[in-house]
Amino acid sequence: MSSKISGGVKVSVETFYQSEYSNPMNSEFMFAYKITIENNNDFPVKLLRRHWHIYDSNGSIREVEGEGVVGIQPVIAPATSYQYVSGCNLRTEIGKMKGTYQLENVHNKQLFNVAIPVFEMQAPFKMN
Image 1 (cartoon, rainbow, N blue to C red):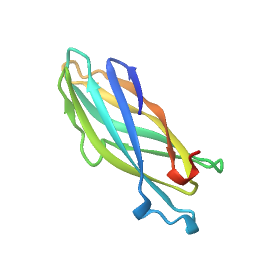
Image 2: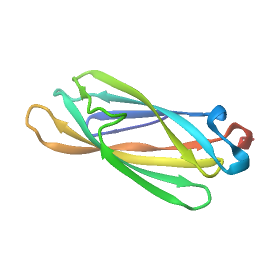
Image 3: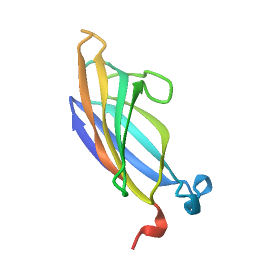
Image 4: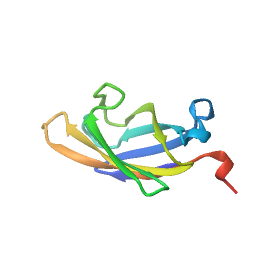
């Protein structure tokens, strides 16, 4: 698991290889990731946007950005967390992701970014 704290928010990521949705013969490797966002601030935050950098081990890089996560813009109260699961397809057995969330302080409407830690995705058959 990878974790990082920034802006008073802790982001933790756990990854899973999805063999049933992968096709190695066609260079299709599917991964799921579970993200936990913990608000350690004394004010509620609203997750407005996400921005991802996705790296395949063949050197290709993709960027993905958009509103919210999995179709919603959750509000996370102080001392609580929000968790969701999403997925990523790679063209290689190994890759990584990192990014940022844009959050809003619900009380004063100020925007700030928090870091999503770098996390690796690796098909189990590539592990030593």
